Image (cartoon, rainbow, N blue to C red; front, side, top):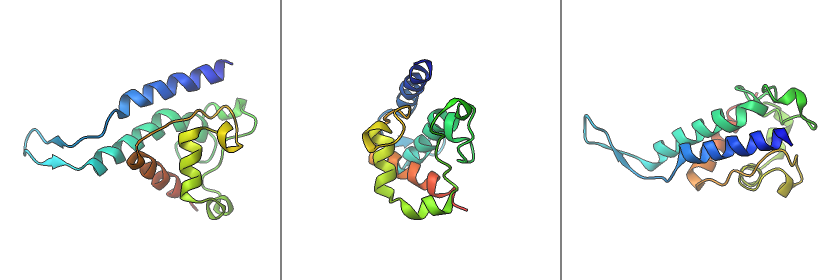
Length: 129
């Protein structure tokens, strides 16, 4: 129960960090920053804030909370798993949560913009060995 409460707290914090997507102007140059760059940064923040506690900084499933979890978090570096899963399956797992896709119910849903989800898929795919 405590782990679920912690996960929900992390989810709420991540939602606040990401916020709505918009173009921002650079204070020095006046150039607009693309929504894609903002959402890539949002994906990185979300991964660091929400995902690393279970999946680890390098995506090996060895985050600080992983020792207490059954089943163990996914090792994103597993080549066989990387080949077996589609980008859409990864997005569904992130946005709907583990229970909704037949995975651990301890993984909270993290609905995000399509751009943030694409950024998270890119991060996860980057762990492939």
